[in-house]
Length: 412
Image 1 (cartoon, helix red, strand yellow):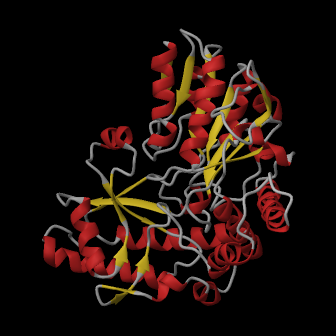
Image 2: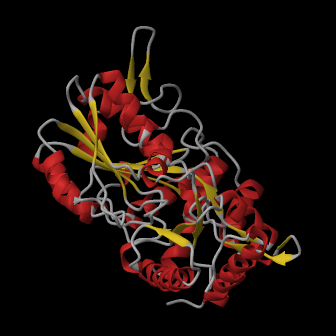
C-alpha cells in the first residue's frame, strides 16, 4: 500500500471547494485527476522545447522527438508489449477501436460472419462493431451476462464459433465494475481463428496489464483515465496484424514515398499516425506512467479493493440501494453503480454536487445495458488512488441527507 496523504498532496485540484464544501471527486471512471508531475511536464514542453517531431534536425525538434518516443517505450513496458512499434498513438480509445474496425474489420469481416461483443460494452466498443456488421452484412452476437453482471462463459463457448471473426470485450465494465476473464475469452476466440480486441479504457488504469498474459490481439485505452492528459489514446496490436492492415488516415508523416502516380506507407508505428500528433500531451503521459509505476499497480489494485469493499458495505446499509454488478470487491474494479427506488439518478447527482461530491449520473454511454437492467440510468461513484474511506463516509452521509430532500431513500 502507499501513503494516501502524500498522494493527495500531488493533486492540487483536491484542495478546491465546490459549493462551499471541500471537493470529493468520485468520477475517475470518466476522467482521472492529474498529479503535479504531469502538469509540470506539459509546462516544461511548452516553455523549453516546443517543436514538431520526426521532421526537424534542429535541437528543439530532436528533444521533442526523443521525449515523444520515450513515452512510447514506457507504454510498451507498462502493458508488457513485445515491440515498441506495436504502440500506436491515437486521440482516445474510441479512435483506437474505430481504427481496428475500419481497417482490420473491413478486410476480414464478410457477409454472414459474426462479431461477438457483450451487453456491458461502452458505446465506444459497441457502435463501431454494430456499424461494421451492418456495412458488411455480418451478425452482431451478444454474450449473455449472469445475474451478478459477469460473462456467462458456458454460453460463450457455444456462441464463439467458426463464424466468429472478431471478439470485442471490455477489460472492466464502466457500469458494473465487472473484471472480465480476457484470457479465457482469448482462448475461445483463437480456437476458432478469430481475433480479440480488448477495450482497456477502464482496466488499464487500475489493473496490472500484460498483453502477453491476456493473449489478446488488440488493446485500446486512453491516457486521461490513467492520470495523463486528455487527447491521447493508445492502440496496441500484434505486429503481424498491424502490418497487414491498411492505414486508417493518410497524409503527412505516415508515408514512405509519394509520387504523382502512387504512395507507399511508412513503417510501424508511423503508418497509423498521420499528421502532427498531440505532442505535448503524449510527452506528459510519460509522467503519468512514472507516477503509477512508483506506486505499483498491485498497490493501486489493493487500495481500490479496500475502498470498494468499504463502500459496498456502506451502500447496503441504505435500505433502498440497488447495487449493480458483482458484490465481491475482488471481482470488480473501482466503480460502483447504484440506484434508489423511485429516485432519478440525476436528482441524486445534483444533491451530491450541492455537497461538493462529484459522481456520474446517467446511462454512462451504455444504453443497451441500461435497457437490460430496466433503468433509465444509474448513479455511479468511481474511485482511484487519491480517494479515501473518509470520502466514502462523506458520500454515505450525503446520501442519507438526500433522503430528507427526496423522501424516498429508506436508510436503516
